[in-house]
Image (cartoon, rainbow, N blue to C red):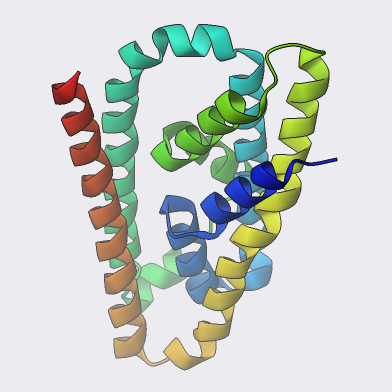
Length: 203
């Protein structure tokens, strides 16, 4: 049985705005629900694998997390800035025609450089893994629970994007939407890296 706190934490973290959900909403607008589903599944799969990894390797992870945290944050935020540029560029009809939504494997691999996803997975491992008992059982339970809760939450963003698709068929409206989403993604990336740099300065 899933812990109530676990359900609440994963649901809130999965459905609130972040790099994954901004990408999914943008893809829903630009490519529709059906073509964005592989990316959505990939994101859930990637998050679940992260959860399994952090739960099973918690002791090791905590020992070197401080060493890799800043480089991972810089790498991840740089990628987010690049993605925000790609979203902005998709505003024009010619670029939109050339582009394709992320495939499932790309959605899963994106989690490796998504700071919010690492934060979620690490917190799940720390907060919801008992200090004793069958580690394999806890890892599988966390991983499965994470996937079951995460998928409908991120799917909401794709569906919202898909619903907006018809309203944004006018070129200037689509350009405005993609510009706003690109700006939000860039702001998210900058906020995450500034927050990380502040954390390093404090320590």
